[in-house]
Length: 176
Image 1 (cartoon, rainbow, N blue to C red):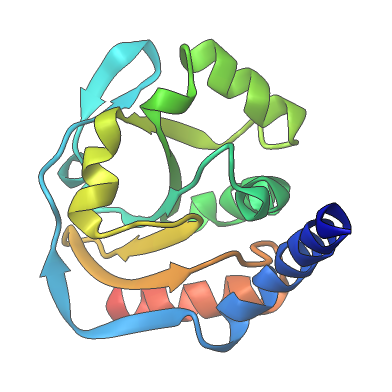
Image 2: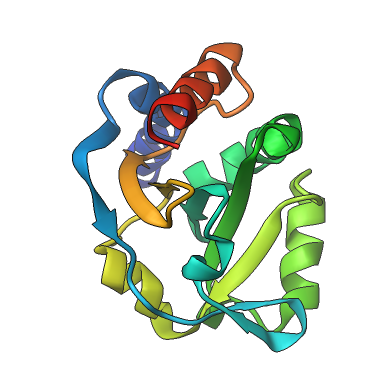
């Protein structure tokens, strides 16, 4: 009985979480915030900082392979990333390094969940997530071309929904 209730609860959270981003999980700040200075790692162990992407509008997606909502939205996020990449919006997905043995495992996981094109980075020790105050996933940080945090989208989203895409374009136009 307890197992059945947990399973029902899981599905309720899993299927309703995408609705939240459309309604009240978007927070655009009145004034931009400075970014934390913390190294993240790209394929081959390449060290980068978010400030390296100054001049680009970023959506930084903190996600985990242990998060059902994160996994559910990978395909949509991959589609979204491909749709917006030519409009000056770059999506980078950051996962805890502790969840993976190497980048090959990460890339295989993304291919399995229909997200082969996502630009993925690893957060060693969860330091960047902690610096941003991110304690749950998915959690999305919006960064303008000046390299400042302008807002967040907490929880999942239907990323390839035309309304969401248009909303992100408007945020970029106003705050980008």
